[in-house]
Image 1 (cartoon, rainbow, N blue to C red):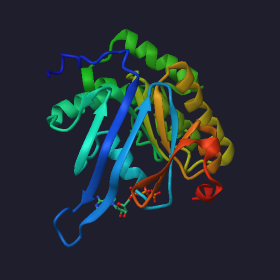
Image 2 (spheres, rainbow, N blue to C red):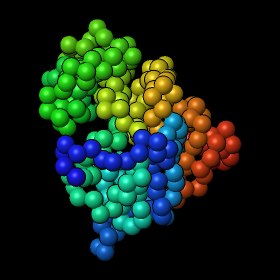
Image 3 (cartoon, rainbow, N blue to C red):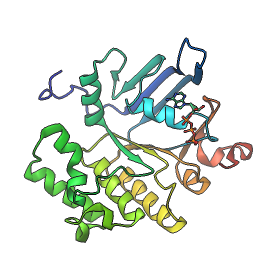
Image 4 (cartoon, rainbow, N blue to C red):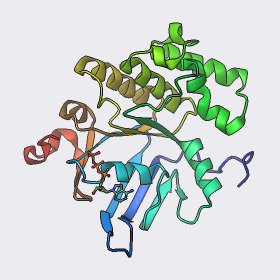
Length: 253
Ligand SMILES: Nc1ncnc2c1ncn2[C@@H]1O[C@H](COP(=O)(O)OP(=O)(O)OP(=O)(O)O)[C@@H](O)[C@H]1O
């Protein structure tokens, strides 16, 4: 699978993410062994907006990292857009990740010395080198969509936390990924800014039909996702409509 050879998955593929009996054991076989994810099975389809919730240490970030090919599982199967990921080489995993997945983290990970526009273009520059005119225009369009046209040429460190998170969302979308993985993207924002940022996720979820999995401790945010997956000690204890989540499982954080 060379850099110039796109992966041959069907764009009609509706299941974007499929996990089958996935386990993650840190420090396996040592006295520090820590079995964090236990037989996690789930599917996420195109256009779904899913909240991933659970108490601190329940394994949410670990699961998100494995889903995003940032970490490997210890056993089980993970498919991204139909591609079985076990057995892929590192370059193949990188290619699949950059073609299929956009990431938004709590602390945005922007490069402060670069302009807002260059930060958004970064995934494309890493993949293709110099971005094309069409790609630059799309990045500019996305910055318009997140309300940052006037800041495009400024370094990101001049922006507020909410504005920086908007840049991170535009950056996650610039490759037109089928899947967005967001780890507490509103965690360090005030309530109003968190709501505004989440509204962007909602909008892009509808307009671009990307699947979004969002780790959150905020019950207001998870309630606005149609589906909630709840982890307890690395096991899925609930996967269904957010509206039907039993109140005993709603307890924050
Ligand atoms: N690299 C690692 N090596 C060993 N153990 C790890 C590693 N990363 C995470 N863990 C352990 O995995 C468990 C789950 O951590 P994780 O960060 O996934 O939880 P979380 O649900 O995201 O927590 P939080 O809500 O506090 O972010 C914890 O016991 C943590 O100590």
